Image (cartoon, rainbow, N blue to C red; front, side, top):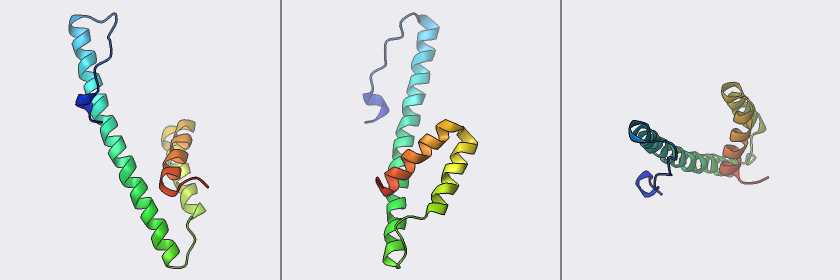
Length: 97
C-alpha cells in the first residue's frame, strides 16, 4: 500500500494551521513507513540468501554469533524496544526457529 492510499485520520481538535501541519506530518510518516516496509522486505530476502549460500557451502543455516551482534546493536541504539525489533527482523530473514 502506498502513502497516497492511506486516508488521513481525523484530526479532532485540530483546525486550520494545526490540521494542515498534522496532515503534512502524517504524509511524511506514511512515506517513512513505505520505506521501512521496502527495506524490511529487502533485508529479509538478503538474509534468506545468506542462509542458502551458507547451507550450500556446507555450513549451518544460522550463525548465532551474527544474530547476537545484531541484537546488541539494536539494543545499544534503541534500548529494549530495539531488542524486540531486532528479534522480529531476524525472524523475517530466517523464519521461526
